Length: 253
Image (tube, rainbow, N blue to C red; front, side, top):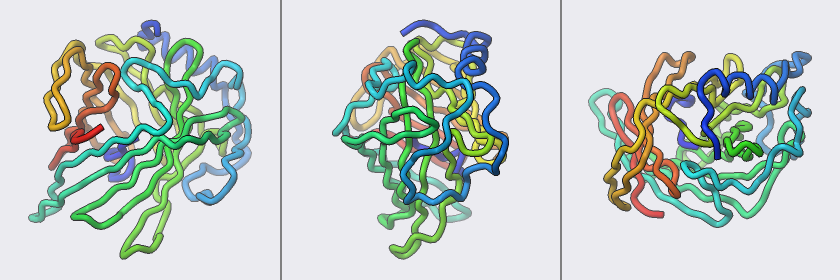
């Protein structure tokens, strides 16, 4: 997942239905330990099972129309971001790995994202997803390596479902409708991003291609007090992000 917010960052599920489904699927969680923001990125991925989650309800076959994930899939995003008086050229190379992991007792698909600023590697993240039997894609967390001058210097924003109070979040509903609201990240104090569908049947024009029938979401991070907009297109997924001071868009897939 492209994470400007957290790092500064199928059937219809209306907001109430989404909230109910998440509570039913995820339960109250394990409050016996702190959140997973600084967990080791070299661990096995075997976070504790999350109360209420039935692993049999999830699959690593992710064919949600607005967020399809296929092993071996690669995508490149480019854009820019203003930092003070400087404009930074940004790039994200994303690869769906031909491997799975286990998070909160659920087998998840791994997406690796390498982020660059002015050509220098700044972060490598592994994001974890699984699709519920109702068609919604859930997000199970991320392992983060932050880089400076080629060396790992931190793991900011890292979290996994099943650690402390962390729970899986709905990343993409099965059939998003205008007004649908859902919490994508449920790691208290670490990552709490929410998303709301504000436009459907939009047309998105980026260097990679022009696609119609897309949706636009308004995403908000209560931790960073930041808002951004994302555009997802059928059979492709994320095509463009717009945030204060910059943008990121698909240039090849």
